[in-house]
Image 1 (tube, rainbow, N blue to C red):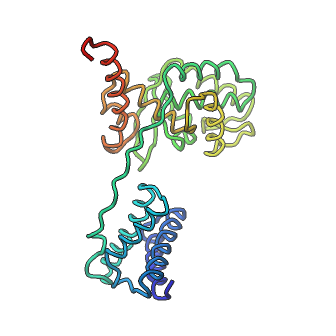
Image 2 (image 1 turned 120 degrees about the horizontal axis):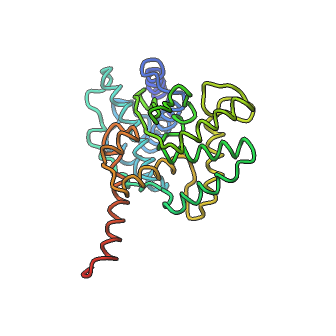
Image 3 (image 1 turned 45 degrees about the vertical axis):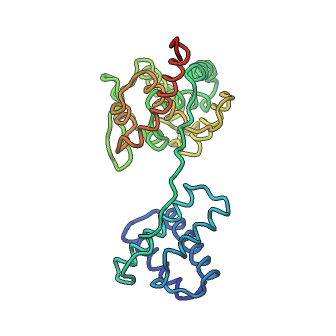
Length: 299
């Protein structure tokens, strides 16, 4: 890579770090994508300053990414890094027009959410209820039950505190993305399970304001919870993906299939827009098609 491209990247990364307050992980991702782009430009077009980079160079780079069998989603993520980079250059007067204006990004293929069928969900919950011989299995049982009953994200659940649970009103106050609060109702059965978990934890492990703890009394951490859930979902043989988010998808899909309004599901999931929630309507439509084909005399 030519020397005069490195300062441009460095200045941009400093901006992301100190002004935008991006996470180290995000900054590394931007750095990797930008260096890859500049290495391609250097190899294909020679020493090219930022002001001389045009849309044809970017399109050639995208074509190379496609030839390397990168997914559309990954390519769009890399292009997004370039968009931010050139927007920064434009803001600072280093270019007069962004070359990204003439770049059309490929459309992402919509990935349908992976979920568990209702009969498999009930079978899984029943199996876990009778296999709580140690603290890990006890944690697993309640994690699965709560994920499915509330549609919580992994980060929301492991950070759940006792004070967020209102047993009298049968509801949980959740602090989600962007510090947005939402209220999620819970059933009598879930409330009973939570109370029992608290009593055993406080008696045998540790008294804690955080709901979930490890067998050593430490706050449950993401990797620990992820592995517990993944292990439990191995029982569902038809499931391709096994993660806590599958249970969030299952929660939403089962609500939609039972006739819940889209706006209500949106609020329960803590989505900022309906667009993110609408993906769950696909399964509802497929179910309607099945019922139609099976029941209508002219289908």
